[in-house]
Image (tube, rainbow, N blue to C red):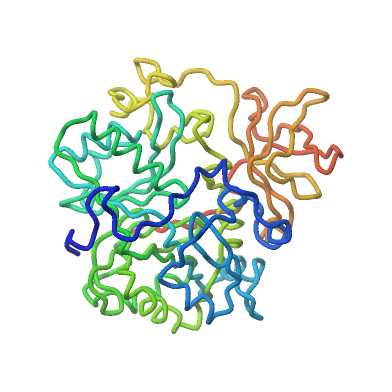
Length: 428
Protein backbone atom coordinates (compact mmCIF):
# COMPACT_ATOMS: atom_id res chain seq x y z
CA UNK A 1 0.00 0.00 0.00
CA UNK A 2 1.37 3.39 -0.95
CA UNK A 3 1.72 6.10 1.67
CA UNK A 4 -0.79 8.23 -0.23
CA UNK A 5 -3.58 6.30 1.48
CA UNK A 6 -2.46 7.67 4.84
CA UNK A 7 -2.74 11.23 6.07
CA UNK A 8 0.45 13.12 6.92
CA UNK A 9 0.60 14.55 10.40
CA UNK A 10 -2.12 14.91 13.02
CA UNK A 11 -3.64 18.33 12.58
CA UNK A 12 -4.39 17.93 8.86
CA UNK A 13 -6.19 14.57 9.08
CA UNK A 14 -9.22 14.09 6.84
CA UNK A 15 -12.46 13.51 8.76
CA UNK A 16 -10.80 12.85 12.14
CA UNK A 17 -12.48 10.93 14.87
CA UNK A 18 -13.60 13.08 17.80
CA UNK A 19 -10.85 13.54 20.35
CA UNK A 20 -11.38 10.70 22.76
CA UNK A 21 -10.81 11.61 26.42
CA UNK A 22 -8.15 9.78 28.40
CA UNK A 23 -9.62 6.51 29.69
CA UNK A 24 -9.53 7.50 33.36
CA UNK A 25 -11.86 10.44 32.71
CA UNK A 26 -14.45 8.71 30.51
CA UNK A 27 -18.03 8.49 31.72
CA UNK A 28 -19.10 5.26 33.36
CA UNK A 29 -21.28 2.99 31.21
CA UNK A 30 -24.97 2.49 31.76
CA UNK A 31 -25.39 0.22 34.85
CA UNK A 32 -27.45 -2.32 32.91
CA UNK A 33 -24.78 -2.47 30.21
CA UNK A 34 -22.10 -2.98 32.86
CA UNK A 35 -23.87 -6.14 34.00
CA UNK A 36 -24.22 -7.43 30.43
CA UNK A 37 -20.73 -6.69 29.17
CA UNK A 38 -17.45 -7.30 30.91
CA UNK A 39 -17.32 -4.41 33.42
CA UNK A 40 -13.55 -3.97 33.25
CA UNK A 41 -13.91 -1.98 30.03
CA UNK A 42 -15.86 0.70 31.88
CA UNK A 43 -13.46 3.59 31.51
CA UNK A 44 -13.52 3.59 27.73
CA UNK A 45 -17.32 3.63 27.52
CA UNK A 46 -19.03 6.99 27.46
CA UNK A 47 -21.95 9.09 26.29
CA UNK A 48 -19.91 11.51 24.18
CA UNK A 49 -20.62 12.03 20.48
CA UNK A 50 -19.40 9.03 18.52
CA UNK A 51 -18.59 8.06 14.95
CA UNK A 52 -19.62 4.88 13.16
CA UNK A 53 -16.89 2.57 11.92
CA UNK A 54 -16.88 1.34 8.34
CA UNK A 55 -18.69 -1.80 9.57
CA UNK A 56 -21.55 -0.02 11.37
CA UNK A 57 -24.27 -1.10 8.94
CA UNK A 58 -22.99 -4.67 8.97
CA UNK A 59 -23.13 -4.75 12.78
CA UNK A 60 -26.77 -3.63 12.69
CA UNK A 61 -27.65 -6.27 10.11
CA UNK A 62 -26.04 -8.89 12.37
CA UNK A 63 -28.08 -7.64 15.38
CA UNK A 64 -25.18 -6.01 17.16
CA UNK A 65 -26.05 -4.19 20.41
CA UNK A 66 -24.31 -0.89 19.75
CA UNK A 67 -22.65 1.21 22.44
CA UNK A 68 -20.33 4.25 22.52
CA UNK A 69 -16.70 3.20 22.95
CA UNK A 70 -13.51 5.26 22.57
CA UNK A 71 -15.20 7.83 20.33
CA UNK A 72 -16.94 5.27 18.12
CA UNK A 73 -20.12 3.20 18.08
CA UNK A 74 -19.30 -0.50 18.36
CA UNK A 75 -21.13 -3.73 19.25
CA UNK A 76 -20.83 -4.87 22.85
CA UNK A 77 -22.46 -8.19 21.88
CA UNK A 78 -24.76 -9.64 19.23
CA UNK A 79 -28.39 -10.27 20.13
CA UNK A 80 -28.73 -13.62 18.36
CA UNK A 81 -29.16 -17.22 19.48
CA UNK A 82 -25.42 -17.83 19.04
CA UNK A 83 -24.46 -14.46 20.50
CA UNK A 84 -24.16 -12.91 23.94
CA UNK A 85 -20.96 -12.38 25.91
CA UNK A 86 -20.74 -15.95 27.29
CA UNK A 87 -21.38 -17.68 23.96
CA UNK A 88 -19.10 -15.34 22.03
CA UNK A 89 -16.30 -15.82 24.56
CA UNK A 90 -16.48 -19.63 24.53
CA UNK A 91 -16.70 -19.74 20.74
CA UNK A 92 -13.37 -17.91 20.46
CA UNK A 93 -11.64 -20.61 22.52
CA UNK A 94 -13.32 -23.58 20.76
CA UNK A 95 -11.39 -25.95 18.49
CA UNK A 96 -11.74 -25.09 14.83
CA UNK A 97 -13.63 -21.87 15.59
CA UNK A 98 -12.74 -18.18 15.46
CA UNK A 99 -14.27 -14.83 16.35
CA UNK A 100 -14.41 -11.65 14.28
CA UNK A 101 -13.96 -8.34 16.11
CA UNK A 102 -14.27 -4.79 14.74
CA UNK A 103 -11.30 -2.93 16.24
CA UNK A 104 -11.40 0.04 13.87
CA UNK A 105 -11.36 2.43 16.84
CA UNK A 106 -7.66 1.64 17.23
CA UNK A 107 -5.16 4.15 15.82
CA UNK A 108 -3.07 2.95 12.87
CA UNK A 109 0.14 4.92 12.27
CA UNK A 110 3.03 4.75 9.79
CA UNK A 111 6.45 6.09 10.72
CA UNK A 112 8.84 7.14 7.95
CA UNK A 113 12.17 8.91 7.62
CA UNK A 114 15.83 7.96 8.01
CA UNK A 115 15.72 8.60 11.78
CA UNK A 116 12.41 6.85 12.53
CA UNK A 117 14.01 4.07 14.59
CA UNK A 118 16.12 6.50 16.63
CA UNK A 119 13.01 8.55 17.37
CA UNK A 120 10.90 5.55 18.31
CA UNK A 121 13.62 4.33 20.66
CA UNK A 122 13.36 7.71 22.39
CA UNK A 123 9.61 7.49 23.02
CA UNK A 124 9.26 3.70 23.42
CA UNK A 125 10.99 1.29 25.81
CA UNK A 126 11.59 -1.61 23.40
CA UNK A 127 14.33 -2.68 21.00
CA UNK A 128 13.00 -1.31 17.73
CA UNK A 129 16.36 -1.30 15.97
CA UNK A 130 16.65 -5.04 16.47
CA UNK A 131 13.44 -5.87 14.61
CA UNK A 132 13.99 -7.63 11.30
CA UNK A 133 11.67 -6.78 8.41
CA UNK A 134 8.22 -8.10 9.22
CA UNK A 135 8.96 -8.58 12.93
CA UNK A 136 6.85 -6.84 15.57
CA UNK A 137 6.55 -6.47 19.32
CA UNK A 138 4.54 -4.96 22.13
CA UNK A 139 6.10 -1.82 23.59
CA UNK A 140 5.27 0.98 26.01
CA UNK A 141 5.18 4.75 25.52
CA UNK A 142 6.60 6.38 28.64
CA UNK A 143 6.60 9.80 30.28
CA UNK A 144 9.71 11.57 31.55
CA UNK A 145 8.70 10.23 34.97
CA UNK A 146 8.89 6.65 33.73
CA UNK A 147 5.14 6.01 33.80
CA UNK A 148 3.04 4.55 30.99
CA UNK A 149 1.28 6.79 28.46
CA UNK A 150 0.01 3.83 26.43
CA UNK A 151 0.95 0.39 25.16
CA UNK A 152 1.39 -0.25 21.45
CA UNK A 153 2.10 -3.00 18.95
CA UNK A 154 4.50 -2.06 16.15
CA UNK A 155 6.14 -3.85 13.25
CA UNK A 156 9.14 -3.20 10.99
CA UNK A 157 7.44 -2.78 7.61
CA UNK A 158 10.67 -2.29 5.66
CA UNK A 159 10.46 1.27 4.39
CA UNK A 160 8.36 2.28 7.41
CA UNK A 161 7.27 1.20 10.88
CA UNK A 162 3.60 0.24 11.24
CA UNK A 163 2.11 0.97 14.68
CA UNK A 164 -1.26 0.39 16.34
CA UNK A 165 -2.20 2.36 19.47
CA UNK A 166 -5.26 2.16 21.71
CA UNK A 167 -8.41 3.84 20.44
CA UNK A 168 -9.18 5.77 23.62
CA UNK A 169 -5.59 7.07 23.74
CA UNK A 170 -4.71 7.65 20.09
CA UNK A 171 -5.23 11.43 19.95
CA UNK A 172 -3.34 11.87 23.23
CA UNK A 173 -0.58 9.62 21.92
CA UNK A 174 -0.26 11.49 18.63
CA UNK A 175 -0.13 14.86 20.39
CA UNK A 176 2.66 13.48 22.58
CA UNK A 177 4.54 12.21 19.51
CA UNK A 178 4.21 15.62 17.82
CA UNK A 179 5.72 17.31 20.88
CA UNK A 180 8.56 14.80 20.99
CA UNK A 181 9.27 15.15 17.25
CA UNK A 182 9.56 18.92 17.63
CA UNK A 183 12.28 18.38 20.24
CA UNK A 184 13.93 15.52 18.34
CA UNK A 185 14.65 17.45 15.17
CA UNK A 186 15.63 14.46 13.02
CA UNK A 187 14.21 12.98 9.80
CA UNK A 188 10.99 11.35 10.98
CA UNK A 189 7.32 11.70 10.04
CA UNK A 190 4.12 10.25 11.46
CA UNK A 191 1.13 9.36 9.29
CA UNK A 192 -2.30 8.75 10.84
CA UNK A 193 -4.11 6.25 8.64
CA UNK A 194 -7.70 7.25 9.28
CA UNK A 195 -8.72 5.82 5.90
CA UNK A 196 -8.12 2.27 7.17
CA UNK A 197 -10.38 -0.05 9.16
CA UNK A 198 -9.05 -2.82 11.40
CA UNK A 199 -10.62 -6.19 12.18
CA UNK A 200 -9.28 -9.01 14.35
CA UNK A 201 -9.91 -12.71 13.71
CA UNK A 202 -9.06 -14.71 16.84
CA UNK A 203 -9.27 -18.36 17.77
CA UNK A 204 -8.00 -21.85 16.91
CA UNK A 205 -9.69 -21.75 13.50
CA UNK A 206 -8.40 -18.33 12.46
CA UNK A 207 -5.53 -19.64 10.34
CA UNK A 208 -7.76 -21.87 8.22
CA UNK A 209 -10.09 -18.95 7.52
CA UNK A 210 -7.37 -16.41 6.71
CA UNK A 211 -5.62 -18.97 4.46
CA UNK A 212 -8.62 -18.65 2.11
CA UNK A 213 -8.14 -14.86 1.89
CA UNK A 214 -4.39 -14.45 1.31
CA UNK A 215 -2.62 -15.00 -2.04
CA UNK A 216 -1.65 -18.63 -2.78
CA UNK A 217 2.01 -17.63 -2.40
CA UNK A 218 1.52 -16.92 1.33
CA UNK A 219 2.21 -19.86 3.65
CA UNK A 220 0.74 -18.97 7.05
CA UNK A 221 2.49 -21.94 8.69
CA UNK A 222 5.70 -19.92 8.32
CA UNK A 223 4.25 -16.73 9.81
CA UNK A 224 5.09 -16.40 13.51
CA UNK A 225 3.00 -14.62 16.13
CA UNK A 226 4.01 -10.92 16.20
CA UNK A 227 4.99 -10.74 12.53
CA UNK A 228 3.21 -8.98 9.68
CA UNK A 229 3.30 -7.86 6.07
CA UNK A 230 1.40 -5.84 3.46
CA UNK A 231 -0.77 -8.06 1.26
CA UNK A 232 -4.05 -8.48 -0.55
CA UNK A 233 -6.97 -10.04 1.36
CA UNK A 234 -9.94 -11.53 -0.50
CA UNK A 235 -8.50 -9.83 -3.57
CA UNK A 236 -8.56 -6.41 -1.88
CA UNK A 237 -5.45 -4.26 -2.41
CA UNK A 238 -3.88 -2.08 0.28
CA UNK A 239 -4.30 -4.49 3.20
CA UNK A 240 -1.95 -5.55 5.97
CA UNK A 241 -1.89 -8.76 8.01
CA UNK A 242 -0.34 -8.99 11.48
CA UNK A 243 -0.37 -12.23 13.44
CA UNK A 244 -1.29 -10.89 16.87
CA UNK A 245 -4.29 -10.24 19.05
CA UNK A 246 -5.80 -9.49 22.43
CA UNK A 247 -7.42 -12.78 23.43
CA UNK A 248 -4.58 -15.19 24.23
CA UNK A 249 -5.49 -17.23 21.16
CA UNK A 250 -3.75 -17.47 17.81
CA UNK A 251 -5.14 -14.92 15.39
CA UNK A 252 -4.67 -11.98 13.08
CA UNK A 253 -5.33 -8.27 12.89
CA UNK A 254 -6.27 -7.30 9.36
CA UNK A 255 -5.98 -3.70 8.16
CA UNK A 256 -8.16 -2.81 5.16
CA UNK A 257 -9.26 0.39 3.37
CA UNK A 258 -12.50 1.72 4.87
CA UNK A 259 -14.39 1.45 1.59
CA UNK A 260 -13.54 -2.27 1.35
CA UNK A 261 -13.93 -3.19 5.03
CA UNK A 262 -17.43 -4.62 4.72
CA UNK A 263 -16.38 -6.65 1.68
CA UNK A 264 -13.55 -8.21 3.71
CA UNK A 265 -15.75 -8.84 6.76
CA UNK A 266 -18.38 -10.54 4.59
CA UNK A 267 -15.69 -12.74 3.03
CA UNK A 268 -14.55 -13.78 6.53
CA UNK A 269 -18.11 -14.44 7.71
CA UNK A 270 -18.77 -16.74 4.75
CA UNK A 271 -16.86 -19.29 6.82
CA UNK A 272 -19.45 -20.89 9.11
CA UNK A 273 -16.81 -21.39 11.84
CA UNK A 274 -16.57 -17.61 12.35
CA UNK A 275 -18.81 -15.77 14.81
CA UNK A 276 -19.10 -11.96 15.00
CA UNK A 277 -18.05 -10.98 18.52
CA UNK A 278 -18.39 -7.81 20.57
CA UNK A 279 -16.51 -5.75 23.12
CA UNK A 280 -17.86 -7.68 26.11
CA UNK A 281 -16.24 -10.97 25.13
CA UNK A 282 -13.12 -9.17 23.94
CA UNK A 283 -12.66 -7.87 27.47
CA UNK A 284 -13.28 -11.15 29.29
CA UNK A 285 -10.99 -12.98 26.83
CA UNK A 286 -8.11 -10.54 27.41
CA UNK A 287 -8.53 -10.78 31.18
CA UNK A 288 -8.36 -14.59 31.10
CA UNK A 289 -5.14 -14.14 29.09
CA UNK A 290 -3.73 -11.79 31.75
CA UNK A 291 -3.50 -8.86 29.32
CA UNK A 292 -3.69 -5.25 30.50
CA UNK A 293 -6.42 -2.76 29.63
CA UNK A 294 -5.04 0.77 29.48
CA UNK A 295 -6.86 3.05 31.89
CA UNK A 296 -7.66 0.16 34.23
CA UNK A 297 -4.54 -1.97 34.73
CA UNK A 298 -1.92 0.48 33.49
CA UNK A 299 -1.92 4.27 33.22
CA UNK A 300 0.30 7.32 33.61
CA UNK A 301 0.76 6.69 37.32
CA UNK A 302 2.21 3.18 36.84
CA UNK A 303 5.76 2.21 35.85
CA UNK A 304 6.73 -0.87 33.79
CA UNK A 305 8.20 -2.48 36.94
CA UNK A 306 4.98 -2.07 38.90
CA UNK A 307 2.97 -3.41 35.95
CA UNK A 308 5.26 -6.46 35.56
CA UNK A 309 5.98 -5.37 31.99
CA UNK A 310 9.76 -4.94 32.10
CA UNK A 311 10.02 -7.81 29.59
CA UNK A 312 8.96 -5.26 26.95
CA UNK A 313 12.33 -3.55 27.50
CA UNK A 314 14.45 -6.72 27.42
CA UNK A 315 16.46 -8.90 29.80
CA UNK A 316 18.96 -7.62 32.39
CA UNK A 317 21.86 -7.43 29.91
CA UNK A 318 19.84 -6.38 26.85
CA UNK A 319 20.82 -3.29 24.85
CA UNK A 320 17.79 -1.26 25.91
CA UNK A 321 18.25 -2.07 29.60
CA UNK A 322 21.93 -1.06 29.54
CA UNK A 323 21.98 1.76 26.95
CA UNK A 324 18.50 3.08 27.89
CA UNK A 325 17.94 6.49 26.26
CA UNK A 326 14.14 6.36 26.35
CA UNK A 327 11.96 8.79 28.26
CA UNK A 328 11.92 8.15 32.02
CA UNK A 329 14.41 5.25 31.98
CA UNK A 330 16.36 6.69 34.90
CA UNK A 331 13.24 6.73 37.07
CA UNK A 332 13.00 2.94 37.31
CA UNK A 333 16.38 1.63 36.02
CA UNK A 334 19.82 2.03 37.58
CA UNK A 335 22.67 3.21 35.31
CA UNK A 336 23.67 -0.48 35.01
CA UNK A 337 20.18 -1.46 33.85
CA UNK A 338 18.99 -3.08 37.07
CA UNK A 339 15.42 -2.58 38.23
CA UNK A 340 14.96 -0.05 41.00
CA UNK A 341 12.94 -1.03 44.04
CA UNK A 342 9.21 -0.49 43.93
CA UNK A 343 6.42 -0.72 46.48
CA UNK A 344 3.68 -2.52 44.51
CA UNK A 345 3.17 -5.11 41.79
CA UNK A 346 0.41 -6.13 39.37
CA UNK A 347 -0.86 -9.63 40.18
CA UNK A 348 -3.63 -12.07 39.33
CA UNK A 349 -6.26 -12.87 41.94
CA UNK A 350 -8.64 -15.82 42.44
CA UNK A 351 -10.35 -17.69 45.27
CA UNK A 352 -13.34 -15.41 45.95
CA UNK A 353 -16.92 -16.50 45.27
CA UNK A 354 -18.39 -13.27 43.90
CA UNK A 355 -16.74 -11.24 41.13
CA UNK A 356 -14.37 -8.55 42.43
CA UNK A 357 -14.86 -5.50 40.25
CA UNK A 358 -12.58 -2.59 39.42
CA UNK A 359 -11.82 -0.53 42.53
CA UNK A 360 -12.47 -3.32 45.04
CA UNK A 361 -10.11 -2.88 48.00
CA UNK A 362 -7.58 -5.51 49.03
CA UNK A 363 -6.64 -6.06 52.68
CA UNK A 364 -4.24 -7.95 54.92
CA UNK A 365 -6.02 -7.93 58.24
CA UNK A 366 -7.19 -4.37 58.82
CA UNK A 367 -4.60 -2.80 56.51
CA UNK A 368 -5.46 -1.96 52.92
CA UNK A 369 -2.67 -3.36 50.75
CA UNK A 370 -3.96 -2.76 47.23
CA UNK A 371 -6.95 -2.68 44.89
CA UNK A 372 -8.50 -4.53 41.98
CA UNK A 373 -8.11 -2.98 38.53
CA UNK A 374 -10.02 -5.52 36.40
CA UNK A 375 -12.37 -8.31 37.37
CA UNK A 376 -14.96 -10.57 35.79
CA UNK A 377 -16.45 -14.05 35.84
CA UNK A 378 -14.29 -16.36 33.73
CA UNK A 379 -16.47 -18.25 31.22
CA UNK A 380 -13.74 -20.89 30.74
CA UNK A 381 -12.85 -21.45 34.39
CA UNK A 382 -16.43 -20.86 35.58
CA UNK A 383 -15.20 -18.82 38.54
CA UNK A 384 -14.33 -15.16 39.24
CA UNK A 385 -10.89 -13.83 38.28
CA UNK A 386 -9.28 -10.42 38.73
CA UNK A 387 -6.04 -8.53 38.48
CA UNK A 388 -4.86 -5.66 40.58
CA UNK A 389 -1.98 -4.16 42.56
CA UNK A 390 -0.71 -5.31 45.95
CA UNK A 391 2.22 -4.36 48.15
CA UNK A 392 5.37 -5.90 46.69
CA UNK A 393 5.95 -8.21 49.66
CA UNK A 394 2.51 -9.78 49.05
CA UNK A 395 2.98 -10.38 45.30
CA UNK A 396 4.24 -13.96 45.61
CA UNK A 397 2.01 -16.63 44.08
CA UNK A 398 -0.14 -18.35 46.71
CA UNK A 399 -0.24 -15.42 49.13
CA UNK A 400 -3.65 -15.13 50.80
CA UNK A 401 -5.21 -11.69 51.35
CA UNK A 402 -8.78 -10.42 51.56
CA UNK A 403 -10.92 -8.57 49.05
CA UNK A 404 -13.85 -6.38 50.04
CA UNK A 405 -16.87 -7.23 47.86
CA UNK A 406 -20.21 -5.60 48.63
CA UNK A 407 -18.89 -4.61 52.07
CA UNK A 408 -17.99 -8.21 52.93
CA UNK A 409 -14.49 -9.66 53.18
CA UNK A 410 -13.63 -12.69 51.04
CA UNK A 411 -10.37 -14.59 50.73
CA UNK A 412 -8.31 -13.81 47.61
CA UNK A 413 -5.24 -15.76 46.53
CA UNK A 414 -2.44 -14.19 44.49
CA UNK A 415 -2.33 -16.19 41.26
CA UNK A 416 0.02 -16.46 38.32
CA UNK A 417 -1.25 -15.09 35.00
CA UNK A 418 -2.44 -15.91 32.41
CA UNK A 419 -5.41 -17.56 34.05
CA UNK A 420 -6.02 -19.63 30.90
CA UNK A 421 -3.06 -20.98 28.85
CA UNK A 422 -2.25 -18.88 25.79
CA UNK A 423 -2.00 -20.37 22.30
CA UNK A 424 0.31 -17.97 20.43
CA UNK A 425 1.66 -19.54 17.25
CA UNK A 426 5.33 -20.30 16.73
CA UNK A 427 6.51 -21.65 13.38
CA UNK A 428 8.45 -24.91 13.56
